[in-house]
Structure formats: C-alpha cells, structure tokens
Image 1 (tube, rainbow, N blue to C red):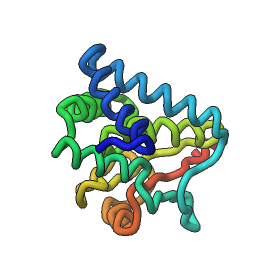
Image 2: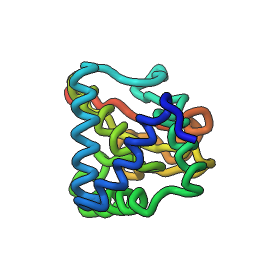
Image 3: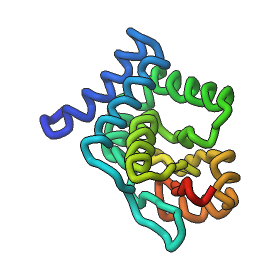
Image 4: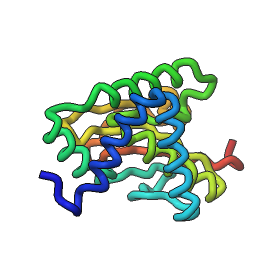
Length: 177
C-alpha cells in the first residue's frame, strides 16, 4: 500500500521509468544528474558520510536505501527501464576518456547521488570519485576499477570498506596532482 509518507519517493522512482519510456535512458540520466547538481547547489560545498584519516569517504547508510527496498518489494524486481539506465551508464563509461568520473552503480539512483556528491565536492574545490558501491538489495558490489587505480588503493581495500559501508569515495585535491 502506498502511504502519503512514501508516495513522493515511489512517485520519483515510477517517474524515472516514465521518462525512460518517453525520452530514453540518456535523457533520463541527464535529467537525474541535473537534479543531483541542483540539490548540491542548494546544499553547498562539502562531503557526505564518514571520513577516514585519509581522503577516503564512505557512506555507512545507503541513500534512498529504504525506498529502493520497498520499491523492489512492490514490483518484485527492478523495472527494465532501470536496467536500461545502468547499461547506458556502463556504455558511456566504457567509451569515456575519463572512466574514473563515473559511478560504480549498484542501483539506478546512484546516478542522482553521484552527481550530487561530485557537485558538492567541486564546490569545495576538489574532485570526488566513486570507488565502489554495495546494493541494499543483497550483497551485490560494483567497483570502478579506473577510479580505484587512480586513488592508489586496491579493489581489496575498497571491498574491506564496503563491508561496513554502501559507497566508497576518494577526494582528489587538484593541488596534489
């Protein structure tokens, strides 16, 4: 049953499927990225999550996690439009000259969350790369190998952090390049 308190998140998730149907996955990705960037502009510079004594930031909770779990229960699985977005992002990453700038996607909402985090980091004068993510719908893990390599960590390092987190990021300071 849809209750008023969870109607907006579910409406947003259904809206994603409708936009994919109307405009395609590429335009939907662009739309979600623009929402994330606008929210970051409103919030201002900074970083979400817990920070280690290095430039590693991790999120011990999954943004939108409850909404994703509830949505998947209602629909028994993710809609095919979500898979279209994920495969389109994967294709864009594989064709990019800067694949480290893409999210390690474990769910479709990672597009929104990643653009939000990147924009807030940019406002703070840094760059932010997603090294890995873990799905709230099981222990599925995704890694951005190119971002991991750029960070100087190993996949095992990132996996160890994902044992206690849902997302792992690294802050890159331009002056350190």
